[in-house]
Amino acid sequence: MDTVLLLSRLQFAFTISFHYIYPPLSIGLGVVLVILEGLWLKTKRPLYHQLARFWTKVFALTFAIGVATGIVMEFEFGTNWATYSRYVGDIFGSALAAEGIFAFFLESGFLAVLLFGWDRVGPKLHFFATCMVALGAHFSAVWIIVANSWQQTPAGFHIVGEGLNARAEVTDFWAMVFNPSSVDRLIHTVGGCWLAGATLVASVGAFYTLRGRHRDFARVSIKVGLALILLVSLFQLFTGHHSAAGVAKNQPAKLAAFEGHFETAPAPLYVAGWVDAKNEKTYGLAVPGMLSWLVHGDANQPVTGLNASKPEDRPPANFVFQTYHAMIAIGMTLIGVGLLGAFFWWRGVLLKQRWYLWVLVFAVLGPQFANQLGWWSAEVGRQPWIVYGLLRTSDGLSKVVRSEMVVTSLVLFTLVYMLLFALFVYLLNDKISHGPDESDLLEAGKLALPKHKN
Image (tube, rainbow, N blue to C red; front, top):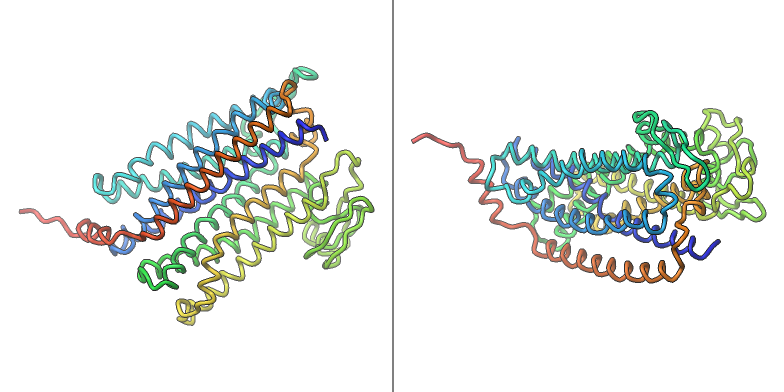
């Protein structure tokens, strides 16, 4: 692989992977805030008000770091990937303009009311602002996923020009938006975001319980987080299957790499294993015919293998296989965590299971790793194409960028991002160490008092 190409891919992989720590937390916490503030409006219990105010502060932190880390990638499109940017500019321009209009301005416009309007606007208006911020965060995910999904399954376009001057133009906006993979990928990605927020809330609640602090706050945090973990992890099982079925139809080489499947024949489903791409063999624990049954509903139906593609058109099978199966393993583990927690909750012993509370403390890492692994599987799985079947990654590179330029910027980005991560961890730890403000309970009591005329 060309040195500039390798470095540019590493740089983009690093910057987007680091950025992707924060948007899932923001989206997931937005849902939690809507739930908590809705409970406060319904019950007028001061505890829900305290919870909402505390998690609003954490949301603001993740939102700020997410914005700071996301700006870099837009510059990379123009510096490292100029040919690609020219090719997809009409497509990406439409999607990113929609994100700016319908998502970012909606989210940031109501963010000030969410953060600073607790004592300045009424509870219903503040709840509306919270809903708008959460909706804006989801809209942002919609348009980013639409743009990325178009690269996976292009639709609603035609090619104008030839060679280096070729570019894709939108001919049907809604066909571009609802391309064959966008809905499946959006639903599955948003589910991963909800899990990220839910596990963070449950993790902090479990930590406080183990330390004997903020008992009421911790109890509600655990139960709200655990309920979301159970529901969303099961939901992810359904959306993941549906998404994989779409991959089998639209990107068969990617599905074949997911499962280390080389020959077009009835295919097993691997639980774990190792892919020897050189000898076209996969070793591991597998359920015979299971992949065929999941794809076709018939264990004897053939599934397209990697050998149906030219060697130069195949993704790196073992890397994709490992990341994909690691993502599934984490997802199944989270289902187990949710089911076990629901059992303890039903038996009334949830807060007495100290070992399980420690599991919840560290469960916050699960969705983060699963989100990263799933993203890597999807992106590496479409290689060598940057736009599937149309533009190779090597052809999307800028022609004037030199390797020393990319190395310098990669080193600088790494240093800055590490500083931002250290700042994020320090501030998050500071907020968790401080805990919820008791004054929020008193303020909630004042807001809950009925107003009488003199």
